Image 1 (tube, rainbow, N blue to C red):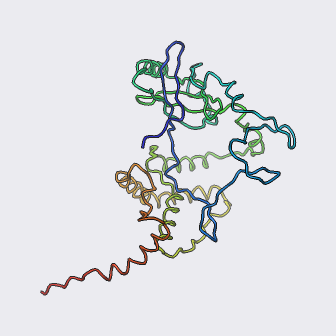
Image 2 (cartoon, rainbow, N blue to C red; image 1 turned 135 degrees about the vertical axis):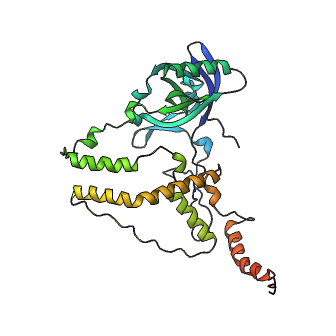
Image 3 (cartoon, rainbow, N blue to C red; image 1 turned 90 degrees about the horizontal axis):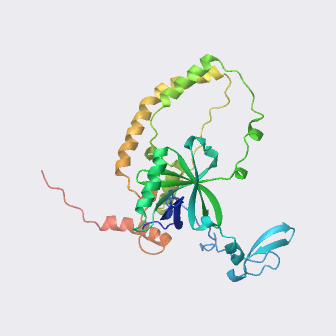
Length: 323
């Protein structure tokens, strides 16, 4: 199923305008998620919206937004009032300026989106804007309203389309000085840096995100599959820690020796990951979960486990052919 657009409107560069749609470039839907359930009944927990003072449930039509100005004192703001202050960026991404991409501090980056033409018209204008940005080797800065708030968005060409990245406002980014002031100014010897650089060179390679594995997600899937199959769950031993570094130079030398020992194994692991990559389906890791047969996941799993020995017993045994 194609994803739904988070926003639809117009992209405008001066008098050049085209209809566009904004789609999220990332997704968390493939990750394992949990529901809260009642341990005694196995039923899912349901949350109610209640009045903090009376404890009575409040219906959706009686709920309005309020800004807290004092204890128990709020300024109510209605939907109509919010609509009245709607900005032009609610329906149009107006390109305000062009800046070098290197000027954008990584701390300001929030999340990426794909901006594509909406419908059959406007492809020419879209292409003009895209190729203008590409030829200038810069990033276009505009504004867009998502979830009732205006965001800064940086647009850049990505193959045949445009990628838009939401940016934070300055007041959302904390200064590093309050965190880094207490870091000691230490003197490092050339030998230490040379050994550290040698370790980095041994670990250097190409950026291949398709080889990344979410180990926690894999462990979650393994845990769920084992519990559904009725397999025992063994307690995991605590990981060994390297302990405190007493001599930094000795630690660097031991690291280099360790890298030499582990290099062949790491190479084999990388080649194995590449082989698995070609077999992996697009959907992601959720395919690794055992299929649910019939209704009621718990009952179905129990029934499957109960019937497995019976099916094995019912299976006819072929007579071994003599000599």
